[in-house]
Amino acid sequence: MQRYNQTDLAGYVALGSTGEAVLLTRAEMDGILATVKESAGKGKRLLAGAGAESTAETIERTKRAAEFGYDAVLVKTPYYYKPAYKPEVLITHFRRVADESPIPVMLYSIPQFTGIALGTAEAAALAEHPNIIGIKDSSGMCRASQKL
Image 1: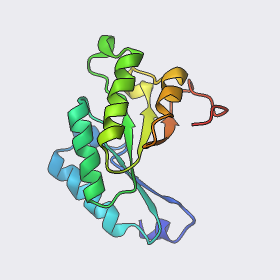
Image 2: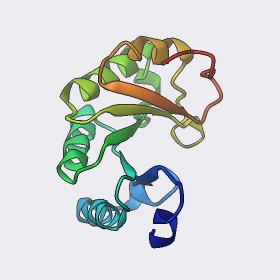
Image 3: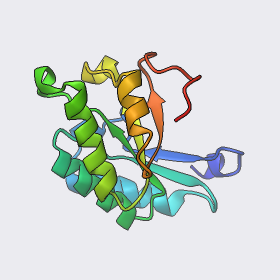
Image 4: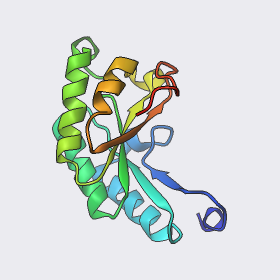
């Protein structure tokens, strides 16, 4: 991180989906959040992966990231109960998280890992929420031409 701190890199994502976040204990996650926060250069933005299978756990993770001083959270779609995750269920989940998160929420659609894509209609509906600041779309379903 010290080397990256000397570049124009805007910031870091801790506990992202391409790391081992899904395999870590809470203590290990907290250790990573602390280490990244302590190592990040001045002015670097910090995002924390906070998505979990339950809305309550996701909210708890957003609060932990805020306590560590992160700027925003990246929240993937829950995926264990795939048949139940209709658009209205996903919208309710993300709105509750955004309502209770002390820091801004960035939606994350990564169906290659979750099996569930956050569609354009859902992303557009969620864009209305004042605490949802954007989307990281790894599905190809949301188009950049849509303003979020």
